[in-house]
Image 1 (cartoon, rainbow, N blue to C red):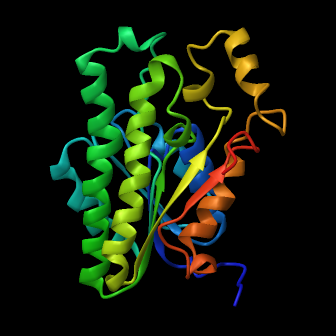
Image 2: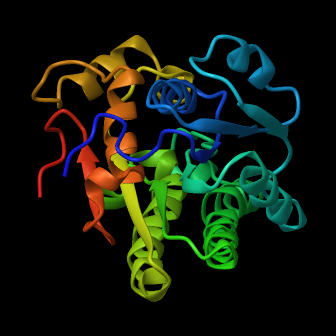
Image 3: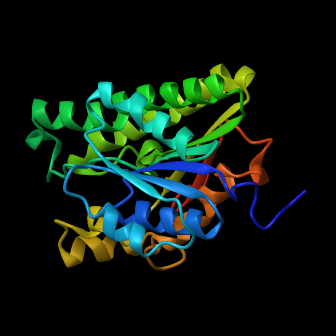
Length: 253
């Protein structure tokens, strides 16, 4: 049965990339839904400032490098100390946009694949272990991108490849984690009005991208919060292995 709090009230939820454009909106939405949110982002990010403006109480933050796998276990230990953990939302990602594929370096490849794909796998598995240890069901929400389907454009091919891997991984882990009662789904945004989307693009290039969107505009970050809360909550209790396309109609399949 639908409930306004969707079973998140009084539970903890981990959000990585919590200071980013989408991450911050997701954190705010989860706090308004009654969750105690653990905000995770890189050192130097303004997560404490974000906490001060959140609804509710009991929110905490961690600043660490997710590409260092040794950091992962402590994230979920802290979340379980805050309150029984209901969900893990993995927003963190990096993009190095190059003009063409010929400009992509090996370092560009390693940086994006290590952060966007390798870290995602091990974070997902560690989250599952935390749910299993607590003896509870839970939800994992990974962020992909419409690039998983389109292949990306020009110098963003590596980013798109990493997000394609996230989609495949999400499906495989959904099947693997189901016996433990852990659901794994993915949100696939199209163009969102964030620095990652609009940074280092000419006005002409951005306008060309927007012209391909049937709704005629970029999404606001807040428009991604609702789909995430749905997948994180009991409202989606029979959904796992799904990719939720949130692209204003730019991607249809």
